[in-house]
Length: 114
Image (cartoon, rainbow, N blue to C red; front, side, top):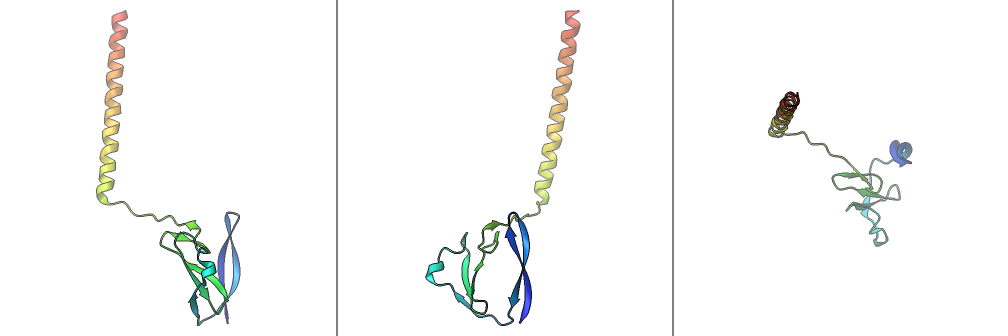
């Protein structure tokens, strides 16, 4: 019998919990009273050696009962980066042009009033 550590959520933080680790595990499906035990379509499994129910979470979820959303970050494609750069440059050019014409119009009005 070995020991393993599991992080348990506690008031927004995680605490370590020491649990026995059994090398050979017997896994069964949970009985019908645990049909809604796992959240977010997680699969309920009964670990015979530990005499506990556990959840096998779907991709994107984690936690004891699959209650936490896991943020999956995907890198941006080169085309997306290029498009963002072009849009930002066009935005800067547009704002610069608008500021230039605003200053020119204000200057002409100021000269006409004099």
